[in-house]
Image (cartoon, rainbow, N blue to C red; front, side, top):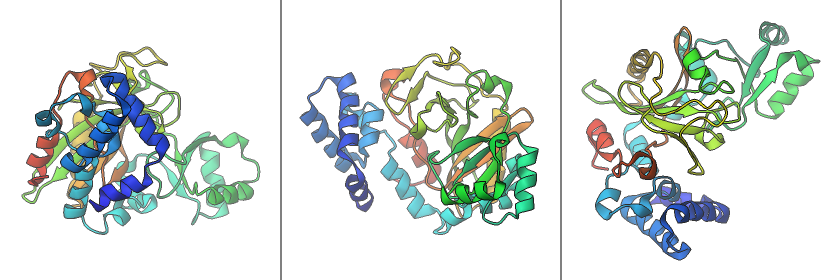
Length: 332
């Protein structure tokens, strides 16, 4: 209830209006009815307002609504089962990169601790780099920079630190099978996983995240997603946060449903290795890039977002709650 109250306090009228309009487009219900139903679902099913809008909950019966995993329920797993120091262990990116240097597959630099000579050498080695906050999330504050345009490296460093873009990374080359889908960003997979007390590793959900006009593939940053089956095949068209559906990518024209993520089994195996190195954080959302040489971990999220496909896109009117229950052993 505290979580829902906090989300309600942060909800802007503009967001509430956006969610209501999304629901109206598919349900034709009056706005007051939609808002009242949102509030009922928040209380009855522990469901966020965005959850309600994105997953077409207005169209579902009470029995079907009970099957959907929600962000408040995900938060509950995090609070109950993950270590209190989980955020420091995985979402402090320089620390995470140090601890998992063998799975990063890219060069990186922390501007807060690097010497001027280290910065100069890093910029000289890379024509383009990614600059991001050391503790950012949701794709916020990320830029791609052409290093040829950097003049005074000292002044540039000071400006980057002032913007909190203190983490520099080389730009990863992605596998050709994903580059043809959308070359403007690295299109990553999100694996939501759980390592139970008996040591059994569960992949609860697999997601393909796809950029769309920008340099990041995050759902919150304008990208889209589709769900993957247990073999890494895209099950449905892509959907963005405005509930726009894309059967083919609007930039490249490539069909999304049916696309096979390359090296998917290798990515799952890598995430299992990583999970076993962090048993104190059993519930995790892993972001993985697929390079021509194999999977590379982008980041780990100790409080993973929930991904499920809209019934109006998939034709499936039940959610993934049962998969979460079976993996975690929680009633939820």
